[in-house]
Length: 261
Image: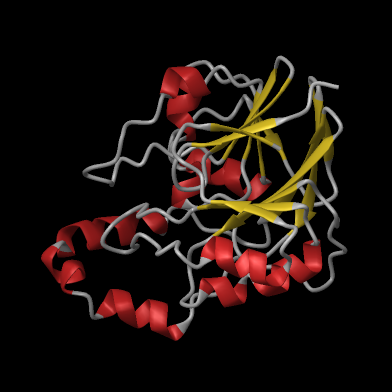
């Protein structure tokens, strides 16, 4: 078996590889980060398919650039396809994605499970409202708020289960769960979005209990679009996983580095 590898490229952008097959998830160019390294658009556009966990600004708004660069297939909710069409993004390469759907892409299989978006806690909201940075960059904040209105979710946020090479990876688009969904357990890797709440290391435990993965990797912990977001402090991530289960592997990825699943 070929096994599987995964790389993180900032925010929620992930590339999974199995043999000659590449799947890209939630590509985002990070154009709002003044100091962010440019995303390798040409490299990532060589993926065999793109899957979108939900059509928010930082998961889907840049899909037009990837289509122009040569991406052939994009799987996203019908709501996301409507958003793209409204923004003038060509939709002929987009395929509707719904909970329960299963797609075969080369050497990998992707199954979509219904999920929920993380609910921002009061402390996180107040930390943005009362941060001096918010007011120093008020024009950026207003521009971003206008952009986010163009990319709204309804009931179309997914957890993606990707299988290939004898391995299974579960990618959460956001740190929420649907109470009526029976999620897959025992995956080789859970990708956990570490953004949206204070005390995320404590909040994460309910996901570890529900999914019971062999390993956990963080994503979405960077400052995706300041001043409305901030860089998460990651010092408690690995120790919290180890406190939950000492045998569980955990890591905070470096941008563009490949990790064996």
